[in-house]
Image 1 (cartoon, rainbow, N blue to C red):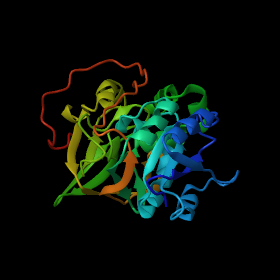
Image 2: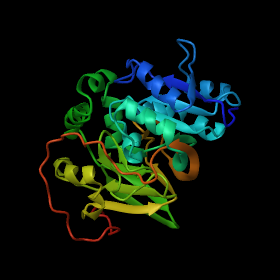
Image 3: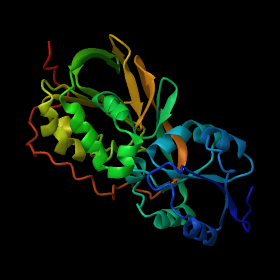
Length: 324
């Protein structure tokens, strides 16, 4: 592999179907070359991230992925197994992991980070053997992942998330879930359960305002609301990551949680439906090295989702469920 005076070799894989996947990469490659990185690109038509990463172990020093959160999700396990540092070109619709890492939205600036900023370790989440960067969820968010088409994301960008969400709101119904963590088991009625590894997900939503991708923790929340319209009132808090302060939201931190439902329900990981309940979710500390700033700070504007603001209730988190 590369010595001190030879360029680092990077496997460059770009998802052409991502919202900005058709970007001309000549300028990006120029930034990488000036930073001492030579790119290796797969033949046209070869898009299997897992296979490509494993095939280049021993011949490349790093992997650069261009795309959105779905592209990164598809590569997560292979990156962890290959022990190759990751560089990110945020070319998707939401770019939630890039936002959590404090990466610039501009691809040229992101390439500069890859070339100049050392890789640092971050955590991964794992649910039923499926790795994820941002969040695993069941309920409303998983239904939204099924409703949100690639065409809608391509045409409307992050606003597409809001459009699809409003379509689903009236159909949202509470379901029963058993939550097992840290020696306790609770059964509640909820609209959505989310288990976050990073800070952001779902096109600008925030799992928890102080979450980071390298704290060795999962951030859990459950929206135990009685009516669908309550979700509208919660939207501002969900964008800020302060929903855990609300009386009808259960929130806690853990390293492992098991979710069980009466019937199997799909699990959404980083916008992709990848498995079903029962869902065993755990954190994998320091599983992947990523070229990103030392202190993750969101620098992407949240999508403009119209919703009324609301004062967070003063009742403490972790209270008994409002449902019998």
